[in-house]
Amino acid sequence: MLVYESADQLLAEPDARRFLHVVILNAIRDKATQLEVRFGDAGGLLYYRVEGRDWELAPPSDDVYPLLKDTVRDAAQLVSPERPELTVIAGVPGARYEPLEAGWLTYQLGGRWIDLAVRIDPREPFGYIRFDIDDAEDFVEAAGEALADYATRLATEEDEE
Image 1 (cartoon, rainbow, N blue to C red):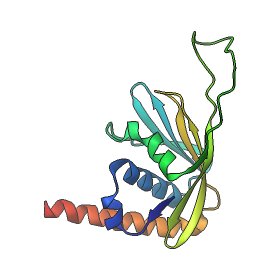
Image 2 (cartoon, rainbow, N blue to C red):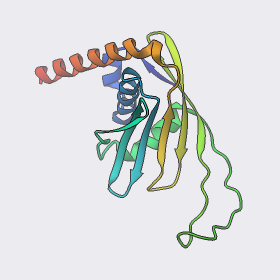
Image 3 (cartoon, rainbow, N blue to C red):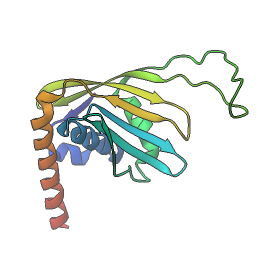
């Protein structure tokens, strides 16, 4: 479960967990129906889908990127299926089948909860994390307010330094 209580609480979170909060809040505010982090050799790519169109966003930083799968695993309720005995006939030599980890992440915002369906492709260094967001209309305003408070708090913190 991820819980947003205040901008101060968000600033106290570890970087990967804070990144996860911010991208989920942005996706909800923008009425996205899907959020995805894709992993590759050169780092991560972040996308979300709004009104049937995919939008590429700023990628996770190099220090956050390798921690995201484990951060989602810690926050979500996942089912990790056993890998079946399977021979890969075509494809890369030595390839093996990796079933998706699937479940949900409960996000608490303003005393209300929203469940996001989660799928993790565990292949390293590739794979992805996908969140499906349904019925988030009631959370749009609260997500916008949370992000505005966080931005204000970040600006205040930078001015103090």
